[in-house]
Amino acid sequence: MDLLWRFLFGGLAVSVFALIGDGVRPRRFGGLFAAAPSVALATLALTVSRSGPALAAIEARSMVLSGLAFVLYACVVRRALARGRWPVWAVTLAALGIWGIGALAAGALLTAYDSLV
Image (tube, rainbow, N blue to C red):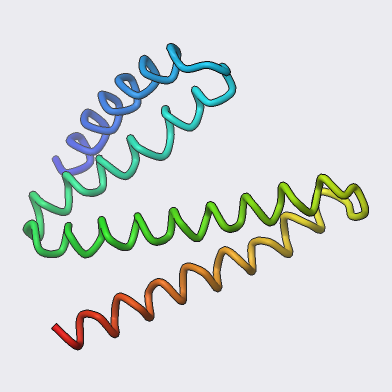
């Protein structure tokens, strides 16, 4: 039954965000609105229903901080590819390490903050 709710809520969220993405200019941003927000919302909704809002709040903070680490990744990739010195695969693989380090640092910050509170 849980799997059915995942499919239903996930499908609804993807459809809503796809409609939003269809109205965004430039068109290439439409995919961003169809994928990441819908998966995040489905995950948070299921977490709230299963484990309560406290765990969902922790997951939401983690998603935000991981998203900031992704922005760092995207900035590094954009800048490195603009120089044109390295192949795309090498830049993206190297920048994945930066994303991972950023996400781990965010996790460490959350853990330190939670231990203080």
